[in-house]
Image 1 (tube, rainbow, N blue to C red):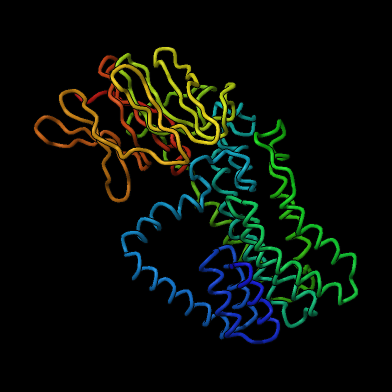
Image 2: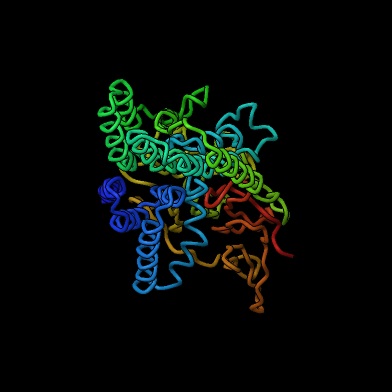
Length: 442
């Protein structure tokens, strides 16, 4: 649907039917936000009726969504889901399946012991956040800046510029899924047809071939020794964007707009600081090369072992492709893979009184429940949109144990060692949970 709306919007744009183009592109952006760079390009090419129509459609859609679904759901989306999606940190920030330049930046500069960190990761974590943030603005705004040369562009160059603007946000996206690539087909094929009519058959053929390449480029299941080779889809999309963007002419307005775009991208990169020091509240991580990249559903069994589900590049011979069940003796610090099934995830370990059992299914986990600990109970506490671990004493008073601006979850009580185990995304990004511990409250 979004691809059809983009095609309709671009055809109406080229025929001067701005209200129709704006309505179609407004609907497309509402359905799939990747099309948003077309709106600043419309502003740069002085199409106020197009921009106004798109804005009205987006506003009507937003008001209708709030009326149907409620304001609280939208607040939660803006506070949690949108930042997670925009940062690429949702669930597993390191997986090569993201096929994005942002994923490559995290692989190079955001360390994790399970990945055999490259030398580049040492002391450069800021780059893992700064470069994707800068790229997310640089590519779309450079396409919009090229719109300053619109009056001097021939029809085929205008069609390529429209395709480049449509593609820009996809190239800079934190996750480039194969199904999302359908959005690039209408604008690129329209540009290729216009380029062929202008007598540039070789360029038209190159555009058509490059439009198909991202969907068919092989995507590795694990990172290769040279991480740059692990994101072929991202490189194919960037090559296509570079080929589409009209590089001439450069009138003064385009020079100024391009410089402004570069400045905004630099500012975004400088402001994209990594998360605060993970140990601000005294928490200590438990890391090991055999630990999963992300974890969930922590439980401490009566024998003192910790059980949790997790994603790991190495399945240790267990079947399936999804989440695994892990066990960990804290004194040894070496996690063991203990559960994996074909066609389903493994999650929510439970102690039956005799053994640990696991839930199997497509997704999901049991709702969190308070955990008895030290005469009181451990619980998850929501404070100003942030989730912390807290302890409720016998007198009913609640004491926050974690105060770091991170998502802390799944507390487990270890009175034998005097520790509270929990999962947290501190130091990495939203929802990429790993194992941490704090001293038990006195």
